[in-house]
Length: 312
Image 1: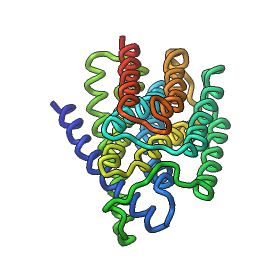
Image 2: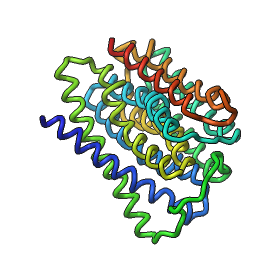
Image 3: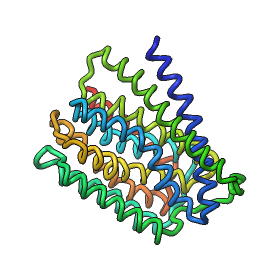
Image 4: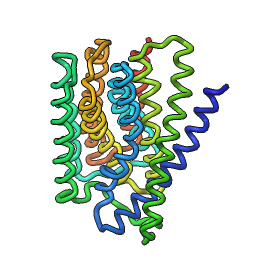
């Protein structure tokens, strides 16, 4: 009963936090006159990646490296398969080609970098974490200085001035609510999973990763319903980049991460690479530069398949 209460409370906080974070992100992009896609890939992405960072650091320090790695790998798969799948089912997203000549390649580069660092020796060393964090910093500098709007943006009622203290307040409330909600949800979900004797790796790539992806799901659903499509897509791509370069980078700097269960390297990481790559052809099929409901069905179907093969 206690675990169910944790899950319910976590969901309430996540929905509220997603709404507050979206308000602050839209207001910030308006006030600073910068593209919403940039805000989505920085402010919103960092806030919604905070649960992964907290979980991964705690898991690694507590001696559960598979939970730390599984959390990030599973979250990246969930962000694109589950979250993006649901998002485009709720509303099609028109995308300019420039979006996938900048942001998608960076996500793939981060994924391949992580694969190269950990696949052959099974360890993510501290110096490799430094390289990942520096790479993220360079990407953000480029993004803030040169990135142009890459998703078709629409004027909404949210595009109006907001006092600075309100922007800061909503940003803080949103971040805290998302973090607290994720903690409650993870505690409840992991408590229920352990009752059935599920392994650390499986808990990481399924239960925990879904729990830590719910901030992205909440923020993206609210964004798409309010027609803030730039924030919706930018949040997901940005979150995957942050998860790899910031979450695992910072965690490995604090303490090297060593793989225990080879299933993470022989199975899970290839799913992450595959679904990340698949986003590119999906944006051209069946209609060019657009993600629609058919793509949503494909992504959700792949995610369900991944979870089934992982658990079975």
